[in-house]
Length: 112
Length: 218
View 1 (tube, rainbow over the protein chains, first blue to last red):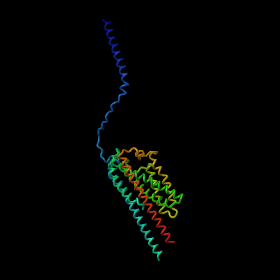
View 2 (cartoon, rainbow over the protein chains, first blue to last red; view 1 turned 60 degrees about the vertical axis):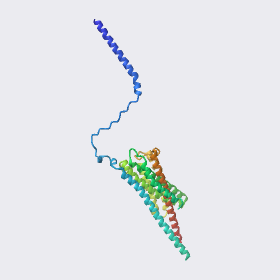
View 3 (cartoon, chains in turn orange, cyan; view 1 turned 135 degrees about the vertical axis):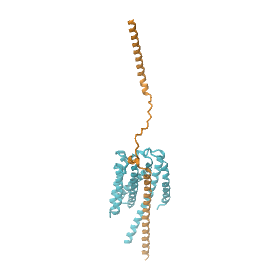
View 4 (cartoon, rainbow over the protein chains, first blue to last red; view 1 turned 90 degrees about the vertical axis):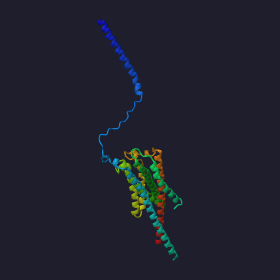
């Protein structure tokens, strides 16, 4: 009776060992295949908001509206170009008037 | 004035009127948003600023070595345009930087070397106006230094650590942003040619006036 009980226990232990060995072997075979498959990327979760930050506490560049800076930049370009054009036109008309005046004076001088 | 001046001036005015529409239709930049649209006038102005410094330098070199008064007049006109377009760059840049970087000004290589180039152009004009006899040659020497500064300004963003965008930005622009930029470049280039011709004409008239004064004295 005691002999029969020991035999049954040893047979069960041996069976468990064989099953474990097969399972480990299958796992080792499948591991590289598993590693080659693309892993699904975890979706980025929006962070939970723990406090409200007033806009006045943001960095300086985040507080500023862009539109006034843009308008000032374009207005400056147009005004600078227009002012320069007016300046050159005024200088040119002055010099041309002066040239005409001198040429007239010289003609009068040569006649007399 | 040459016959082509008036039609080209009309074309330039039409192009400048059309440019804001193209700029408005260009896509927003992802991180800077609306304020990045300053770029479409800032960059062409910067290129014309550098181009006029080169024109001033080459004309000054030819005046120094050949003594041609025509080249001196061209250099004087280009120096004034260097100051004008440099002022546009140095005003629009900080307006953009205030929003994009959080500061009006940063003493990095690109900004500092641009300011230096602009100050050299101012120095040229001041020497010409208040330098007395011989100031034209002194100013021509200054213009050579102004021209030598140009490649340094251009490559500075690629060789030194700076927060200014690199020169690689332009070739990688998408179609709608590139179209707005190159149209603005064409506008500014045409305007530069017209203003340079007008300013040279003013110098020619001044030379004529000086010759008349001299003949009256004799």
